[in-house]
Length: 135
Image (cartoon, rainbow, N blue to C red; front, side, top):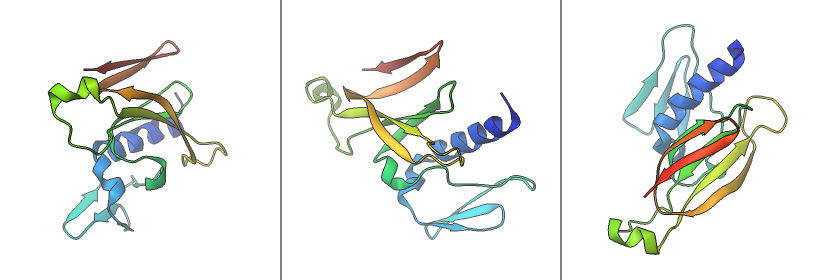
């Protein structure tokens, strides 16, 4: 893995770890981002925070993972508050696939990779296949 991909992976992990931040307005600072009115995310000197996807590409992100080609898979909820016992009867979660089609380091295309999932709780890209745990 080259340095650019490693840095991109680190930035994506940071961004997804705080997935709810997709829905807040960001204000770019030197090496920190102001989120809403009360939270600031900072990184050590020498690192930067960059947005690699826009809110339009995903709706309710829960977790994300990269494949060996640098594509980003995002497990998304439906945004509804469905009781656990009712989830198997109403599988409304999905996995979206985000791609950087022009190679500028920003994901610009999104499509549904898998849908009608109960609640994706984990995923792993391994040897060309996506493994997902879903109740």
